[in-house]
Length: 347
Ligand SMILES: Nc1ncnc2c1ncn2[C@@H]1O[C@H](COP(=O)(O)OP(=O)(O)OP(=O)(O)O)[C@@H](O)[C@H]1O
Ligand SMILES: [Mg+2]
Image (cartoon, rainbow, N blue to C red; front, side):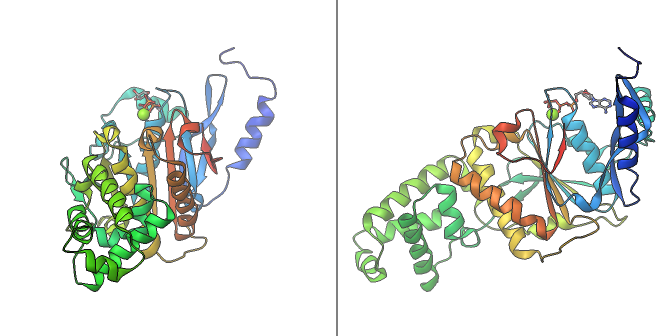
């Protein structure tokens, strides 16, 4: 019954109260609920030092997942931690504006023992391949490399080593592989009559396999992936910046039309995580993370991704934790995202 203490509630509230009394810097998520009344003296908090984990924010539609994400992102930014958000519904653009002074919001904040001041966070918008208003994110085919490209294209191991030979050939002959067209042209040359001696000289690369790779590349480009490849290449260090006032920059990637082109997003994510992983030093246990990712509507982002692909994303997500990068998935269908048990589960 509303307002009436539930059986065992006093003990549970005590346990919550004592469990969250640590002194370290933390994100304030809310307060314990007993029936319908919130207990401001039993706050629920997550220490900043544990946010280099992978976590899950789950709940039915309209339960406040996006708001939770927003509150976490704003608090991280205020404590000097840069944040990366993938925004599929355009829900998050409001972060750039201080919230309206709404008595309902202040009331709700007070009930969980928080003081609410409308503030704006430093937000920068990004877009995949320059579609949309944000700063375009692109990578060159060379920096993407044959291994990652093979994973994204779903190539088998023979095809993967063949693609490696094509990259090697291009490198040895000073042919720049900036966009997908460059790569397709090299393969087209090698499979043409003029290129047949060159193909022979490479050894280990059959005309047939090269033809299969070429077809895969054409499909991939037609799915819209070509916009992501080219110059100037995006420097992932941009995501790790703080503003002059010490706030972490919130980089917000707009993904309004990504549902039609899920492969584009997966490709980008693979590259981004691999690039950060390569550049960042090991940090061990740090006071706060270097960067925290939030993927809202995460179940939509991995539509149609293959099992191998999800496995390799999963592996990178696990490894990147030791570099101080945390990743949160936000979804109403957690089972569709990945088969993980959350380290920090906020349900
Ligand atoms: N802590 C809160 N205080 C006040 N209002 C809230 C709070 N959390 C959520 N709301 C309100 O509830 C509504 C739904 O919240 P939100 O958009 O975050 O849900 P969601 O779980 O992301 O939904 P969906 O799955 O449809 O994306 C919003 O109008 C939001 O303003
Ligand atoms: Mg939402």
